[in-house]
Image (cartoon, rainbow, N blue to C red; front, side, top):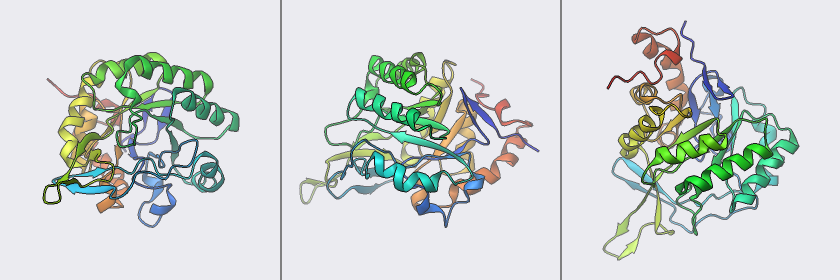
Length: 304
């Protein structure tokens, strides 16, 4: 028997396989495909204070080995989430990590404070500091001091819930941003969100996305994401949740060996909705192949 449990600050998960925000809706959309009992956790679609209509279409474009999206945080708002989605989510047999985004620092703090006031039994709060495909931009995690300040204020407003800072790769040195999040009190960081990109229809001389630019995800970004996770993890300042092009058991193991304490499966859900369940079930055998009885023994075991 292999122990797959992982510890990320105050957040304990039964296994490291998480379904990423924005790729599984609010859980209900995937219940015919995913056995939630197999997952370490589920992160519903980002929620904002007010409803958001999102960006104009087209919102997605397939690219070689990847997907460009510019959804724009389309959601029905904070109150709707708690009234219509939370009653279902709370019944699922896995950890629920709520993902939030604010238009300002104060809005992040207000949402975190509301979580504390509600006393909702969520496993953790993921701060989406790094959405590159929102008109006007919400990429707070491009600035280390701003990242530290938002995390710290959210930690003060919601002291009993583990906090995860979701980081952007669109920076010169992501380790400096991770260090700032850790200084602010983050239990973990998620690395990485999507890479800013674009696609062009040269015959029409127009962008393919209604928002002009969008976030690139999928296998195309895996080597870049893997490097970012390794760079953060080797500094041993904060646990890392790896994200970026993870679709196979080999992908999962590479991120774990590089130093990720957990991983989020995202874009792969669009073409293989049950992938997270299968990866979680296959993980014990892969860990055992390295002669380990506990998953924690292989995290960050890369030899360089």
